[in-house]
Length: 404
Ligand code: HSE
Image 1: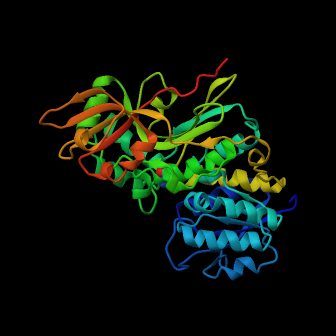
Image 2: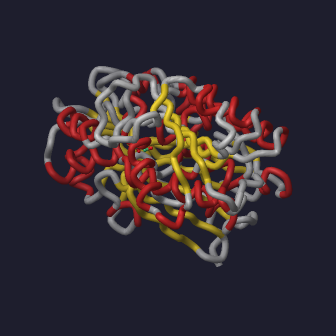
Image 3: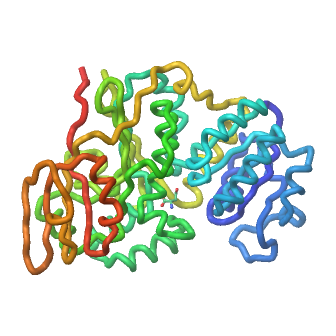
């Protein structure tokens, strides 16, 4: 596609308006937003667009022969699925930021791209402005990658930073994250770890060439963090961060999970605060590399969309090469983790079986246990761990030391 890009944009919220701004600001993009489809054309918005651009009819975009790229940033996974699949079936390339939809339907979306000989790019779906997906797809195009680990959700990181570093209360920090446009319209996605999970699913496809269904990945968020946990972390000189990771555990297997983690000052992600995201990529031969940047917010996310728009200008598409030509590793939950579990009324030592207990502390202000348990067994107790008196955090162990 080396001619002018004429975009049909679906969604005109925080990210959609950001896309409108950055596309108009980037003169070398030779791109024009021709029509914008929204639910309510009369709604007051910060960004004004010329008469006749807004519509509430998807057909106005799909049936416009001039439109040669659909950009979809709709805040509704089902609507986003309908738009993206309709575009791909019509042979129109798509740029999307809808991580939940992509994570749930990626195998089908890959098939549709092949079948209809078109493309879908979605770097904006993972880590806002950080170019994670295209880098994993192109630069790390080999099987020496050992681990991708990081802070993939800006809102929960913002909340933890405000609570941890500024002594603010949790609900006030969450409200701020919503006001600043970082949080999802339903912020439970951010704080439950689900948003990080969706991004991790997408990252894993491009890192290891394997698709794992979201429901098969252990995910635990930050909503039950207590003052006692923050005090504990401070006493130990560490921070609590919500961390997502996919990691090779031996030559032929990998594991993945999303969990709060005690992060020591020597780690890159220790200094990733507020709405920033940080991704550590570890490989054989080069140890660690670190990518850092704004992970949420209208303009940072829109910058990533712009990059995908430009990539389409040059005909770029993901080839999902690793899915085809590597001996793809097998997913396992048969790995031993070291965890911290805070509890008050729930009888954790009575109800859970651990492989080894390192420490057990009881007091009137709350109790905790530090113990080894396999990820598989931890997952068996998943619903128990949802009790409001419980908070779980990972204490990192090193899985596979293969750096030269
Ligand atoms: N709610 C998401 C976050 C937005 O806070 O990271 C960017 O995906």
